[in-house]
Image 1: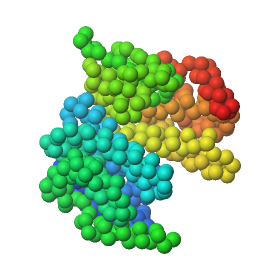
Image 2: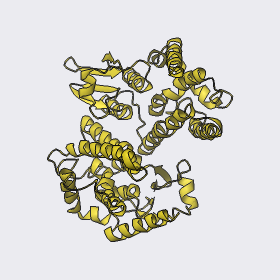
Image 3: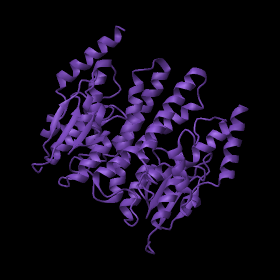
Image 4: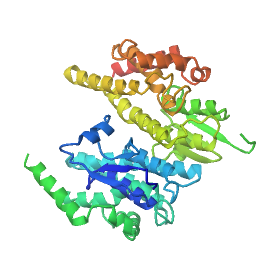
Length: 222
Length: 222
């Protein structure tokens, strides 16, 4: 990065959305200043840079903010062209965007419903979640990564599936998401864990688990 | 388009999502075969080409399908490079994607709630809708189009705001969306209506209104 460039990332350590951006910037080898936000008392800078959603992550490049993780990932790939995140072929790019959107708008929406419902309704949601995860798994189709032989757009967007879902299941005590049910996805998780930058850019497992357990503990008392 | 190329669009005449694709292809000057789907009895081709969502629009280019309107628009812009839909500058591209996503994931979600709730809850939803629409309107900031002096990505995604919302309001008898409340957006709608291709690619107003009235009429009887 040239000396005159200024790059700041507003994030939260346990958020998969800002972790995606950290991972992309690290894969590009771009240096940046990281600003940890207190989500219960957001900084005036965050509110200024993302007045619409008032959420992390926000990437501020030479004073210009970009919000929303999928939009930021595209911005990073277009600004720093080394180590491409998206494929080059237009149809492959479309497929990557399609499956990223599937994770973001379908799988995450269904996953968030699991903890909110009970009984028969919960079974229906779990079935829907499992079907969506199977569809995602099929896209691996023997490859190491969704991007082929190296990590790409869908893998980066998918870190939430790779590392957050297991923690949530441990906290909630479910058996929806296991290596027996999704061997392909768990093989992919193994491949991700072989990449140092991936491990560097995700929350430390025990600290992540302890944080989610304490949140759940508070939730159960109110 | 070269002779050997085959381009098919599966759509539905009253859907703003497939109309977006028609508009983009027409702005590019790309010829295609249009296939009208019967949404109550979807064709085996549609189900084959979009097995995940089973929805229109699907664009099939030389046998390869692309689904989801925002993904298709990006595909079109990357495949046919004349008359760009997205700006060239990475930050302007990010802004266009941000506001397209805002229309798709925020404004449409809020708008769809208005008809579903009543009383105080409805007032809260209408207030939220109005605030979101004001934020969108501010992006015009004196320009003719969201894309500046010519139609672009946000304008194409926004045809649903320009032409569908008025029809829905006429059907439901509301006064949420008026030129008094949103003078900037209505000026933009006027500019869109000066473009022949925009008028060609949207449903004829009276036919559209009659269709929505008949749907509402059925809904009230069940």
